[in-house]
Length: 395
Image 1: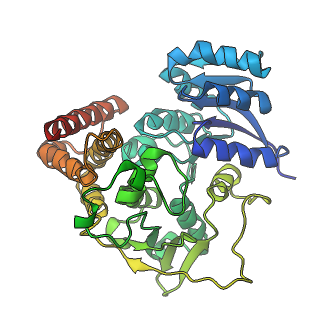
Image 2 (image 1 turned 45 degrees about the vertical axis):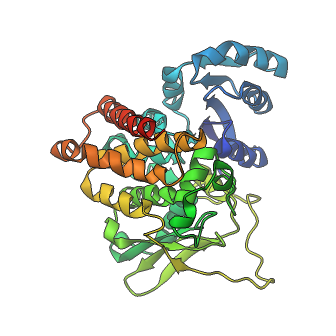
Image 3 (image 1 turned 120 degrees about the vertical axis):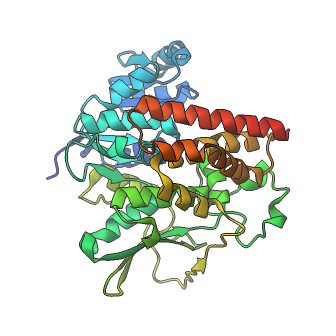
C-alpha cells in the first residue's frame, strides 16, 4: 500500500494545475492537497478548487485579488480556507514542506517557488521551463538530495522515463520530438502575415497562449533543448530535434549500442503530470494508451532551421552562458506578448530576441553566471526593456 502524499499545486487554475487536480481527483487514496496558488485572474475557479479538495490554504500572486477571492471562497462554501496574497505568499507556500510541489506557473516568476520547494526537501514536479532555462545553477544548487526534480514537460518526462533503460554513461544522445506546430512545412516568406489567431491554432496540444505561440515558432523546442541538457547533464551537441507531427512519441534516448528507447502515448498531459506526482510509481486511470488494433503511421522529419531559427538560437545561448539563456527567455516573452497584442509581426518575435542577444552579448560573456535570483531578475528586466525598445521602434 502506497502512503498518501501531501501536494501543493502552484498555478492551479492554469492548464497544468487543472489537469493535475483531475489526476488527484481520480486517486484520493494517494494524494491530499494542502495548498493551491494561482496568479489571481480566475478567483472563481480557484475557490471552486479549494472547496472541492477541502484545501486549508490558498495563495494569490496578485494582492489585489485577495478580497474577491475571499468572497468567492465564501460563496463556494470554503469559509475555513485561509488566503495569503502577494509574490512572497506564493514562495512561502511552495516552501511549506509538502511531499510534492507541482509547479505549473508560467514564466520566470516560477523560479523562486521552485527553489523554495527544493530547499524545503519537497519533491519538485516541474512544469515551469523558466526555472531551468533562466535559473540555471540557482535551481540545481537548491536541491537537498539527488533526483529531487521530476520533469513534467511531456518531452522531458519521456526522456526521464526512457533513461531508466540504461546508465548515464551508456547514453549516446537525446532526441526531442516536435509536433512542428501549425506552420510545419511553411517557408519563412509565407510566414510574414501570420495572425495571432492562426498561431494560436495548434494541431495537437491545448495550452496557454504564450506556450502555444512558442510552439508555433519552435522557441519551445529551443527552450526544451536547454532544459534537457541541464536536467539530464547531456551536452547540446548530443541533443537532436526531430519533427513528429503525430505527437505520439514524446521523445527518445539513443544508447551507445544503437538501441533507441522512446515513450509513446496519445497526447495527454495528464500522463507526465501523474508520473511527476507519483514517481517512481505509476498510477492507473490516468490517460488512454495507444490503440494497437488500429493502423497508425508515425513520421519523423528533420527540423527546417532556416524557417524556424529559434532552436539554433537557443543552442547558441546554451553554449554561451546561463545569462544568455535567461535573456533569450525574457526577450521572447516580451516579443510574444507584443505579437499577441498585434504590436509586432510574427517573424519579428525571434528576430527581436536575436537582436536583444546581439546587443547584450559582450556584457553577458564577461560575467556568465548569476550570483543570485535578484541578479537574474535584473538581467531579465534589462532584456525585457531592450526588447520593448526594439518593438516600439517597429511600430
